[in-house]
Amino acid sequence: VGRTTLLLLLLLFKQHAYALHCDSILTLTGKETFQTSDYSDHTRNYSSDRAIDGNTKSCSHTCSESKANDWWRIDLLGLYEISCISLYNTDQKNIKMSSAEIYIGNSSEKTGTANKRCTTLHGFNPGTNKTFICDGKPILGRYVTVYQHNSDFVVLCEVQIYGTKKGTTDCNRNSCFILAYSKTEFLALTSCNILILNVFFLLYTLGLVCLPI
Ligand SMILES: [Ca+2]
Image (cartoon, rainbow, N blue to C red; front, side, top):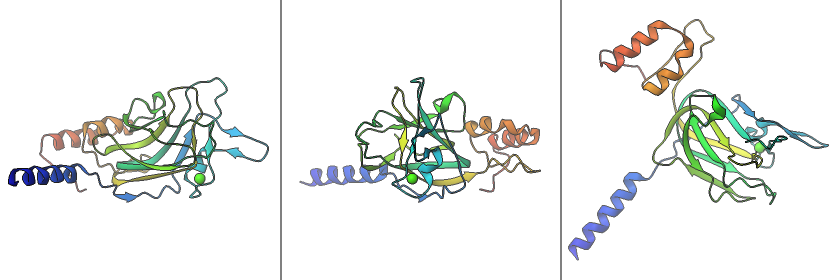
């Protein structure tokens, strides 16, 4: 009996250890959204920003005329460690989102699929909302992309992102204030073209300086 109890305790501990906390919900107001194209009807344009307007009934909707791969993306305008993403689906039965995938990272190239794959939208059925946890662990990134690998539309009625801010990438100011603490971030930020940051990163990787996070 003692051994069984010990095994159960170990299992419980393991489950607890791997349970991922969703962190805080991010305020997405003012963030920039994009999508391959906007679907329109006689009443409105289903633009990408409708996915972050706070209304779970108003949806963004792509319109792929060439049957290309559609995607929706948000630029968080900073570096975030993203733990969970909640999505609200449309109740239209003909919209198939469950095979789409979420990508997170610092690259806005290659339609976002060059970034790390967070997860597939399995079980994201019409009329439901679901919270997705990235496979394995939180992912660091500036861009979150929802990508269709087939010719289906991307329709998102609301996107909520949970995570922690780890740095900013504002290169428009006189001083480019950056907290880079990984090779991935460093490579993503080289567009700033500030040599001193490269030197600083080198010193940091050598353990000679600390970052005031
Ligand atoms: Ca909405």
